Image 1 (cartoon, helix red, strand yellow):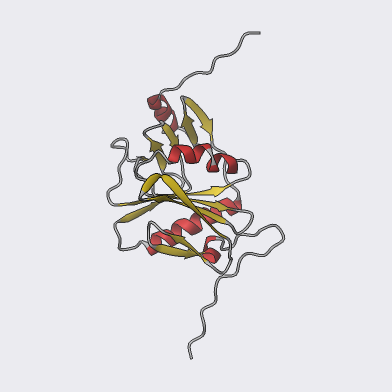
Image 2 (cartoon, rainbow, N blue to C red; image 1 turned 120 degrees about the horizontal axis):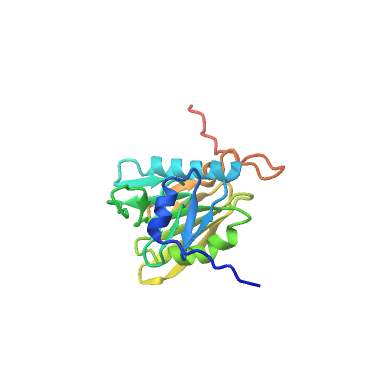
Amino acid sequence: MAVQRLHFYTEQEYLDFERKADSKSEYINGQIYAMAGGSEAHNLITVNVGGELRGALKGRPCRTYGPDMRVRVRDTGMYTYPDVSVVCGEPEFTDERRDTLTNPLVIVEVLSPSTASYDRGEKFAHYRRLPSLQEYVLIEQDRCRVERYVRNPDNPGEWVLTEFSDPAGDLPFATLNVSVPLAEVYARVEFGDTPPLARPQTPPHT
């Protein structure tokens, strides 16, 4: 039986295709992979985190991008779409179209059952090759649990993992020096039969 050979796409072929497409695709090792749409929980968490970071960083030289901003890892040639990415300082792009970022400082991915292993494994291996990246945050969508990886400034090859799962606690972004309440991260997200996390109540003025 003849073995069908995969077509190898160049980066420019991928970009030409992607910029005309109605849907999003990743590019890895010369191959193009369609990206599936997210669930309601995935979308809520993405918007919640992006909105909280944008508000917390207001007045600082930082920009918060959503899932339509493509990111390229120069060293590996991967193109993908993080759920949230943050740049502090001047953003750098592949070309004048300014639609492919190359220097994210922080990346946030919301985990899906079909992509969790990939996001923790191979995808993170690509992201670690970004010299600019200092923090990688993985948020589960079916329970209150966040994994935060921070690059060790004294040993850039080492990433320190901290987990957060207290619904009444905060998710600190160490690189940005801001914290987001987990209740806001998961605002209006339902875990099966469990009601959405309640936001902390502001004490009434007396």
